[in-house]
Image 1 (cartoon, rainbow, N blue to C red):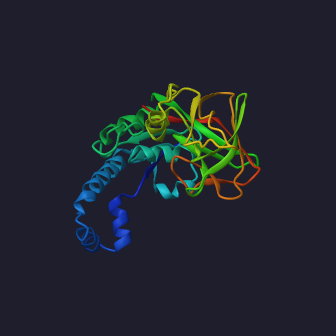
Image 2 (tube, rainbow, N blue to C red):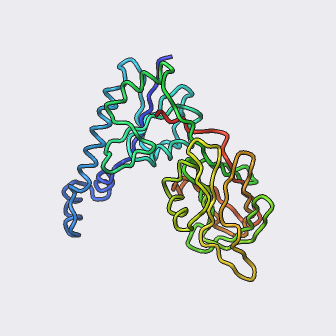
Image 3 (cartoon, rainbow, N blue to C red):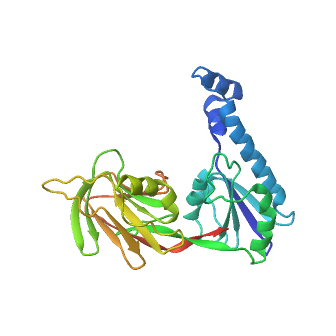
Length: 295
């Protein structure tokens, strides 16, 4: 079978401005009226375009290739033997992970000055060698632990960094939390269940803000950390079960007490969510699948 390389990118701020304003001139005028310049985003756009061009040149001529934007990933049918190349910020690799089933992912960082490179550690120039290594079975990969949330009606959601559970708006999320031997009714700003990969993102700020004494799990450890955001103690609700480490075999259970607009989403993608209603249960734990990141 001839290998297939699936390259995934995210439209840049430059692209979004052109869509919104119709032309480069209109976009430049819009920004100039606000004391900004199109040059601010043009450099990042150019870096991404150059990276995509280099990625295309690195794929052997006889190999199959597909180029898809992030917003189309949920409708794309991945093949078991695909080699996935994510070109962009770290979140792009995270957003793609939930749609894969073990395919190797090569993260390409087009702009190291803008992106940390935790999940996109490679320069475009390294891709040709990495593709050969993957195709020949010599590539070294990390199995990054993922989070799985499953509702009692069968709805399931996977995430690489974290899963958020709460109310769709800024209202209080109301639920009963069941963790190990503890059961507590809570009213909070929702809760986060994060993997070791997510420890560099949203969970990092929560870990610091709460002065959490628990060590975050490593990205490849089969463990997760959960944090309840701003739990409110009252005559009906408590705030004693607000953090913990979930290992393989453990399950965090939430009984929804929101009449409407209870939501569960992963890695910041609110459009791809589960919806919870009063009386439903949600089970959160270590996912059976991992992201195979080429390192």
